[in-house]
Structures are given as C-alpha cells and as structure tokens.
Image 1 (tube, one colour):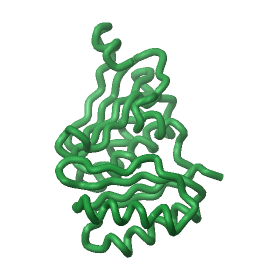
Image 2: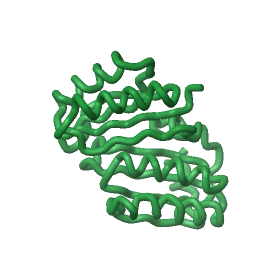
Image 3: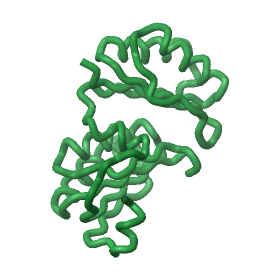
Length: 182
C-alpha cells in the first residue's frame, strides 16, 4: 500500500540533489518534490510503501551524512497532507482558522498529520520553507472545538522538537480574509 511518506532536509543544495537521485534509485518510491529552499537548503519528499520509503530514507542518511539537517518517515499518512503541501487542497468552506509556525519543516509535516488525525479539521495549506526564510507553517480550518483540539496535538509535536515559533486560532475570520485562503 502506498501510504507512507519520507522527507529529507540537507544544508547543501549540491549534496541534496545527489541524495535525491540516490533515494529514487535505491528503492521503489515516487517523488513528490525535490527542490532548493530557503536559506540554501535542499528538501526531498517521497512516498511509497513502508519498506521502500524506509530503505530510501536509510540510504539518504548514509549518503547525506553530515549534510542531513532532518528527516522523517510517516506510515499511514493522512491523505490531506499531499494536497496541502502542493497547494491543491479542496477546502470548500473556511470556518475557524488555526495556524502553526515552525522553524523546522519535518516537525511541521508530522504536526500536520497529527492535527488532521486528532479531529475533523481540514488542511488548507502546508508551506515548507520556500520564500519564508526556511520556516514552515500550516493553516487548518474547522469548527472552533476541532481546531482547538488539533492545535493542541500539533503544537505538542513541534514543542517536543523545540522548533515552535508561534501558533494562533482565529475563531471567526473576516469574510474577505476567508476568500484569500480558498
């Protein structure tokens, strides 16, 4: 079953390109994206079955060595993660808004998966590092109680890693602002 994602972040663009290519050659995984990001980092996100993703990430860690900043593997990842990362979420209605901002990309992906599994929120966006100085953030929507429960679970994940910047809940966003999120 193809429901596992793997993510690797390196502090060298050249090494990141080399590692990304290697990840795809050593295991039967699919590439979601592989790109340079701020500030001078390189990130790659793959998906596939658990064993393949595990093998690909293990190979990346060996080849990447001291250039590896962070990595993750999430088996049984929630299906909302993919469209949130690619900016193609299909959210129809904005309710309360929850925003979590992190210094790290990997912990934010884990937090996003945790948020959607904690309650009935929908992910609006998951922005990873590009154009925002290497930070990351997620935007979720739902009923206030759902957003609150998800926020608590997601923030706990990022606080564990020490990478939390700020988080907030907007219970009733202005109608003009809602339109910018859809």
